[in-house]
Length: 133
Image (cartoon, rainbow, N blue to C red; front, side, top):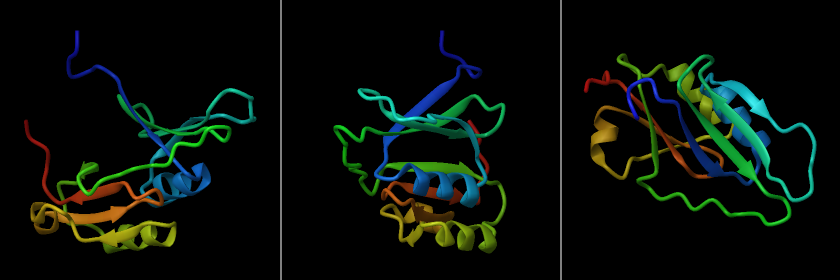
């Protein structure tokens, strides 16, 4: 049964796992939960990032033998509800590690946060609002 403690994984292809790691770990502050350490023919290279001890993570994949090109749209969003103003230093750090600040497709996110595209073009929204269900 799915409930509030169910663990989830979001998987996405990446052109460059090292660039993705810099963005999500050095930039955003997530932890590396697991990564493949050697190339195994027929298997994907993997990087899993998320909050330590959290109930979710990103699995970023790269198949060097049959690469899949990331195809993000302007509405493929990863929204982080900060419940506080967005720290300019965080946005600068994300840009320094390969992110690009972009206007949001939906003006709601520009009103309540900052949108930064990751190195593969997927959008991270840093939202000033708190999550409430």
